[in-house]
Length: 289
Length: 293
Image (tube, rainbow over all chains, first blue to last red; front, side, top):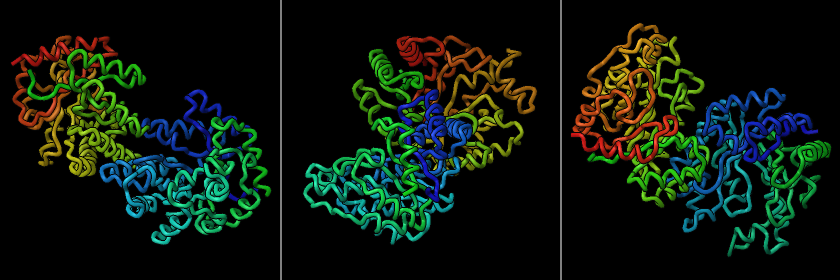
């Protein structure tokens, strides 16, 4: 059993006002206690602030709560965004996200650093500086609201464990932590065996910095984690066990993470055709490892 | 003819992407050159950042431009939001709306200062203080991206024409202007002849039996009018009808607006879907209005 809450992601972008409560009910019926306030749901709340209360009411009626969140992400919305004219809106969007979280009682959110390939022509170090500038602006607000911002390992040059640790060193505040992503870490380990894997494509002419000790490096600062599986080639977001992640190793270490607040299941049920029942059952099993 | 762009608001909140593109095409085919980045579109972009680029492409394809914008509004979304828990979110939302407008090259956005009828228990002066606090927070954002915030006269006591003029006078910066709303103004003129006028209910809600009827609204607002929302009604309610389908005196309004020293845009705020008007009717009517001197 996990000593911290387990939260489940769902692709709520595929639901509507009728099917969303049905999905919540299904999670509750399978023993789930927490769901993720996903980027999709946050986007819907941004569009319609009244949904904030509706969602909380729907969750409460199923005995569920939002244990963590994921910020909107993608080009021009991530921390490294080097396009000066886009940065003010990006920062406002992330600030509004933090405020929505605070208003909904959620106290940890994962933000993407961004992928350098989104900004061709920009120097990697310029983007790294932009990440710092973004955090300089967002962390004081997060501190004030009592929210921990978690930055996540992906499979690009800008979000290796070393890069994240470099950022953490500059911002010792507890308002900054890490989100360990098991699927992304698997790509940056097993991907070395597959010339077509995501890391080779992402790093282009630079040999990827494959690493079999990502979790060990991130562990002291891990506040959240995204657990899902893949084949080491592409970011499939499968249920644990359907890929090549060494779960015994991952769970054993995560249970020792000193700052861990939540275990997030980042399996994407509709996309990968994993049932809510199988997902909930698998995370119960993981808790017993 | 108007010397400033004429812009049309569409009930885009009621349409999907295909219908939206069809309506844009219809406006272009009827000679329109500008549409309003409406509160519905701003909401959609808040939800989905990528929609901004898509909208710009759709507008470009029809030779259309967004000439002005309207921020999300209503109850706690307005500048006088008295809910201290929600107020930080409201302010961020208004700043976002300004930034989104700026990203389209839009230079003017209308923001509702707020109505006291939603919160009648709060004293009038407190409403104005909240509006001032809201302006203190959003104007620097607007100034930094070159957008003029226009506060709009409503039918409510807290944002009646005299109130928005008072607020404007406290902020001499060009970043703040006024949006003259002909339909709202008309209810504070012709509403006196309707015993059941909505405007009477608004004022009664806040404990005032008789609204402050005002025959000189446009004259008061004219020096600082940067935008205007033109639509008609009979004074009984805010029906957003086509000019001529109510009793607004357009022969007075249009010549006066043509002399407004700061006016940047003429906005048609007729509600098409609700009132079953065609795009052709809207465009023809506003071409006719432009000929009134």
